[in-house]
Length: 169
Image (cartoon, rainbow, N blue to C red; front, side, top):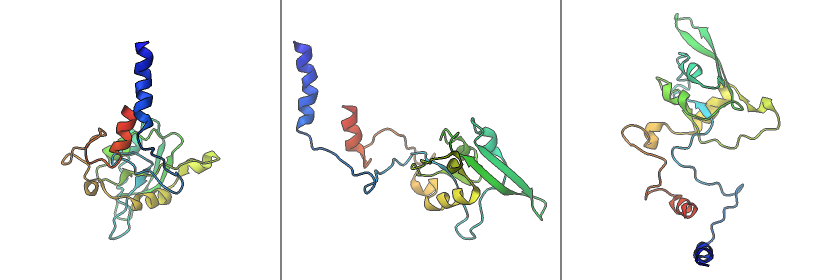
């Protein structure tokens, strides 16, 4: 008998709390600052050139081999990025590619609406990834990194704190 009363305690507690409803297509949920969406390429805001130096570390560290890089020799004798292909159907969104990049040319964007009806819609090229990268801010502007140790744990400054606390109860 006591167990049933304890079970109804949760129901009674939530009965009088305000309901939180979001109308999804019109109202988008604010993503956490450490959310890892689609990997995106960044460009220099002054010149518009890609920051990638074509070192290939991101393609080598990827556990699913979803990144393909085609390096082209440049006129100066260096190498430059010819083609960059991301197969997002394979991607784990682990963020290893952005962590290993020495020049911060690849970052994890806030893109999460990636549905497609065919597999060709899940393959992104350099220009499409650069468009995603132009939308976001850098990690140092976002306050993420070794100087600003942020975690996914709920803190008192989190805008979605009340939603997460209600889920935890």
